[in-house]
Amino acid sequence: MKGECIMVYEDMPVIKSWEELGFTDDYMFKLVLSKHPKLIIKLLEIILQVKVREIRFKETEKQIKNSYEGHGIRFDLYVEDENNTVYDIEMQTGYYSSLRLAKRMRFYQGAFDVDDLAAGEDYISLKKSIIIFLCPFKFLDGRRCIYTFQNYCQQDKSILLPDEATKIVISSQGNITADTPKALIPILSYMNGRKADSTFTKEIDNAIKLEKNIEAERMSYMTYEMKIREFKQAGYHLGRLEDIKNLMQTTQWSAEKVMNSMKITKTEQKKYLTMLQNS
Image 1 (cartoon, rainbow, N blue to C red):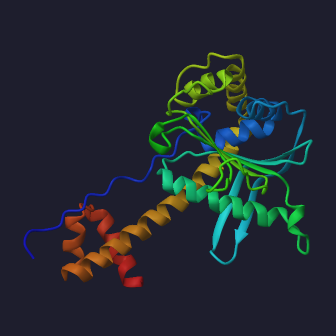
Image 2 (cartoon, rainbow, N blue to C red; image 1 turned 60 degrees about the horizontal axis):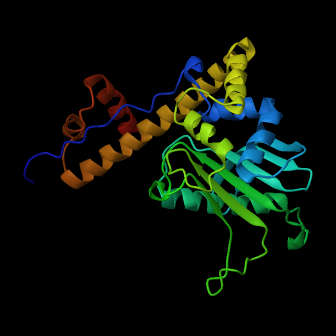
Image 3 (cartoon, rainbow, N blue to C red; image 1 turned 180 degrees about the vertical axis):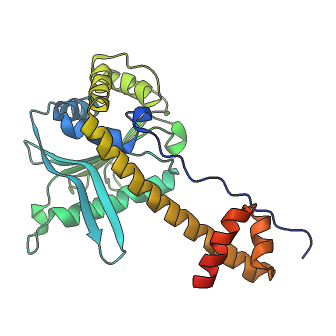
């Protein structure tokens, strides 16, 4: 084998401090809107362009276990309105390709329906559902900032499949088109990190500031942050260990030579050597 395959690994993703959290961070998004339901109502009204009188929480931080795939889903904001329409409202904190995001929505819809239908109930009992993903990145090449998807007949687009399932993507970095609700534009700007400049975004901003001054919430986040950090560290190290093993098998190099090529420090090498011995 000619030369050496140099693999440089970036550090683990940085977990934001309590003070740095904003609207597009999963934790703060969920915290603020779940504690201030009027903000959810206003957000739904802006996106859907309909009047929503009231909402009730189905459950916060809902866990749906899908046994045949082993995936777990947490619904960030899982609510129901006065017309028994159920909503899953999510802030997508990491970047997703358009295909990956679409498949994620497809998976969520399936789990969403399974959870909504009690054992023995007929399919007709499934409630009208709307899944809303807020994305602080481009979707489908940024052609639009709001996409609403339903199932239509390919042979005749005037025929809508009456499954009562709707998926909506709000892309803050997409193009603002003529049909973009005017009240949505300041939200897109706010998602892109700009100053709150509308009544609604100022309400959100004030709610975030209010929560940040609550010591109990700060302590809760610190506990959450520690658990997430431990989880990420465990996954990160296991991933690197697998890469070390694969490179050792491919190159027939020693563990030390592989780790040197990966720019792993001597201190960390000792840890991975122990992990290799125990694996």
